[in-house]
Image (cartoon, rainbow over all chains, first blue to last red; front, side):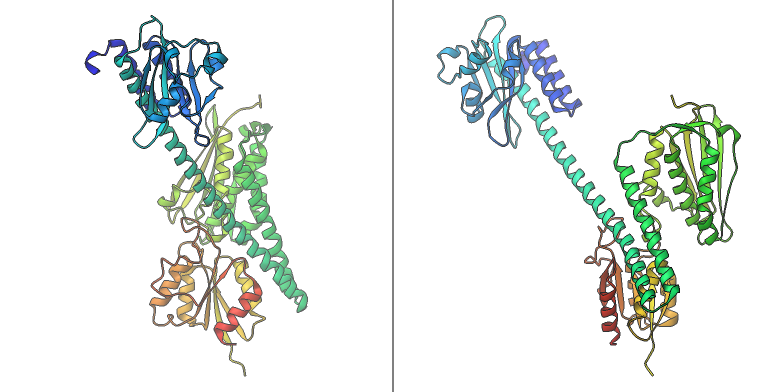
Length: 404
Length: 132
């Protein structure tokens, strides 16, 4: 066939091949393939039928021609009509006078109002599977279909079958990846929740022990542990909800200095308990910035808390929060510590769910949530760290004075 | 006079350490000592040669399985019974399942207790291991 291909036919095959390789959206690919086929073969109508996985019926996945809309919702049984025969037998067929062929199923014409005169139909199969068939109907110039037409159809059908197989495989891979991700998320969540439950169990046990033994110290300590883990559970649920939802920031004009001050105030006790100093420098140019105050507060709280934790083992642990405006369009908030630093291999996983360098004390959700909130602001977060020396997180956000 | 048993608790969560200490206070004559990470846990085990080690699995830098393996390699600590505290989770990146002991050198701990810890289960297991 190759030797006798007309230029237009060759170009059509090349276009079909390119389309199949360029797209993974199956519907787009098949529509395009049949559109090219109908044009280059100069036929009145064409269709691509697929075998329904559940019933085995033939569905008109693509239909071209002036009665296409009427044909598309129809379905046929395997063995029914010329297309059904082709699917059932796995063999191509040319029928240039359908009225005289017993295989012809006239109901499609009757229901759609189309008048079929001649059909060329080929099966659509890859090595492993028969997917359906392609048929072309009524040459526009009234001439008969021949072996050349059939061969061209077969070449197109082969490409279409590859497209279908690729799309199905891709869907299977996506589904496996989705299930694996769900499984890992559930496992990660279960692990976090178990740790918090352990804290609650422990706190409750100590409260009970303190009451039984009339030991106020144990009672009081147990109660503190209970409250703390209650807080962890609340944070965990909030982080899970934030991470799972597509959300837009609730913009308001806010004073960035006030947000930083509030975060440092909240961290004061924790930092003092660990012997860590937290300092920050106000910036008068950031007193009216459009952002989501609650979201950014959450981000900074997480980053400053992590920085304080990192200083746990450092002598004269120090956390510094500062801001800068590198140009008129953005501003940066930098949170630096002189703590343990982050290993290079850990840096790559920092924003992954459930990754934590804090053993059982980290949920592994704080940084992914922080990253999400900042991304929702069209901002960026970067980390610079040296093991044993310290870490700086830089949050860069658009500098806007208005919410509109 | 009853023999006082020393129990070393190794867990990076101080709350979890205090929980275990509270449970041990109701078991018998037990003197608890503790460490908040795997490295200092190993050091204390060698210094104090406790009668029992209660060892958490998920800890930063040196996890419980690695600590266990090192305990078993050292003459002074290899005979100390060990109870491991573990949450059940996937092996990759999050924690280790209670069944998969790939980092071990052919030995197993004397018992596993899954978190959240059941105080009664912990009491029974400690009593059994210490022969109380």
